[in-house]
Image 1 (spheres, helix red, strand yellow):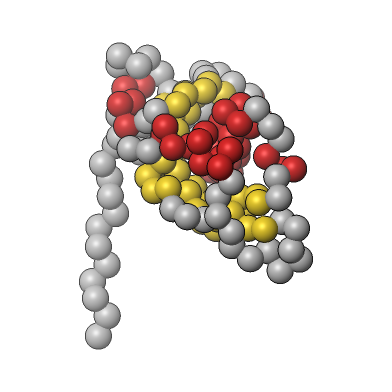
Image 2 (cartoon, rainbow, N blue to C red):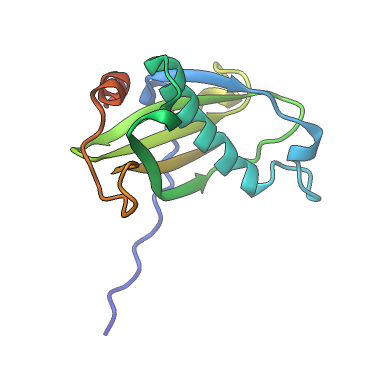
Length: 156
């Protein structure tokens, strides 16, 4: 006998749930035939929010470190439609900072922060596991100190 499926978490985070921010420009081509942001674009935005923060906060090209973050998991919960031509605010927070992994939450907000844009239109979950890029087997390795210093202020 299987356990009943639990109901999905439909709680919409607000802007206070995030620690770092950036804004993304939407493009005509981001919308799908139904007139809203294509689901694949959400994952582009989630990935960009994390990696742009790492690049800016560390001041280095994170792809050149001996330990690199590989994506172990990514997901998105959708709450409200978004689309062109309005910009999207991306909020970033760290849910868990481990020895070799980081779990991020990324809130996607569109609209007036005092009105419709006060609550997230979507929230992504993004897991980086750090691996030794100098070893062909890429075993897990501790998060580089430079990266840890960049993400520690984001822990909620």
